[in-house]
Image (cartoon, rainbow, N blue to C red):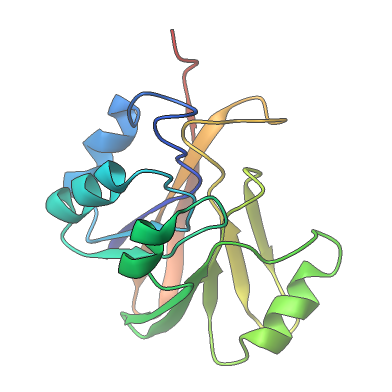
Length: 167
């Protein structure tokens, strides 16, 4: 099962559209995660129409319409792994312990907010993944997203994809 992970698209403020490279991944993904800060409903509509399965949450920059369509936290069991998605997890310092305590029944937590890619494992085994942002790199050298495969209850082939600068 192939997963596509993204967050913090901030359209149309940070970019006019999602990058072509990211859009090309949609047909290859069995499940698409978006960890909040969509900003516009058009992006949600686009991902809903092009994804086999979309798991999304709202973020701190998402208005009432997105909040009415998306939960703050989403959960799914995918090929034996228990996933959660949330936008904000708080400061980097102490993140693993804080998330492990808050989500003791998860195997993987997909999150966003910082625009900083993150891949760590908390004591107890919770894997924390932040794909960064495909449209706003902030203090990072690149805009990014992640792909990962779930196979028999194991994450494999995790890749952080760097996007070329927008022209």
